[in-house]
Length: 238
Image 1: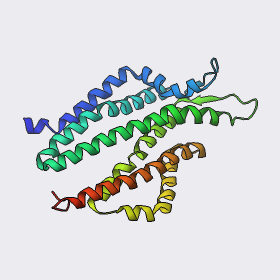
Image 2: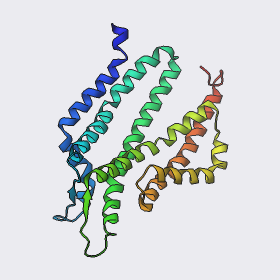
Image 3: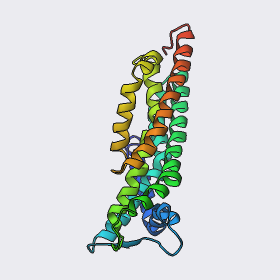
């Protein structure tokens, strides 16, 4: 019974989190649109509209799914580690924990930059492009998707240093290669920023600049990782 229950534990945790978030979908909606409302003058809040009877339900469902996945992520990671850790050496376990901790910090940094810095700046700017005399009404489904996509994009893009560190430790890249490929990498970062952000140049630029900084930091971190790996008697192998 225990062996049968183990695979179901992550799914049950995720389902419970989604159900909880469904009860707080109104609060989640207010939280998601807060960057837009906080950036507008008092009394000039956006007017949200729905275009079909199912839209409000689907928006709440989407918020519950995203919120459930976010708050259940520690539980899902715990279940994954509980399955993988018994087969790892102590050094590999420590490395995995360091990577997870770094990934978590970078995820929250990306979310904070998007939520507190970029969205309050970009969304009112985009709304100002409406021609004179045209009222601005926001389609609630599209607006929520726009914000969620931007936040997920920032969180994912900020994982760049973790990816570089893993590749450097495994020997697929070296600090010298990262330096030589800098121009190509910057082009790739521009494409990445365009893919993971809403389609406007300002949001793309605001994401790309931190990614360039993270890339340079990744070069320094890769030098440290490679130096420590090569200094071990076993050459860094487990």
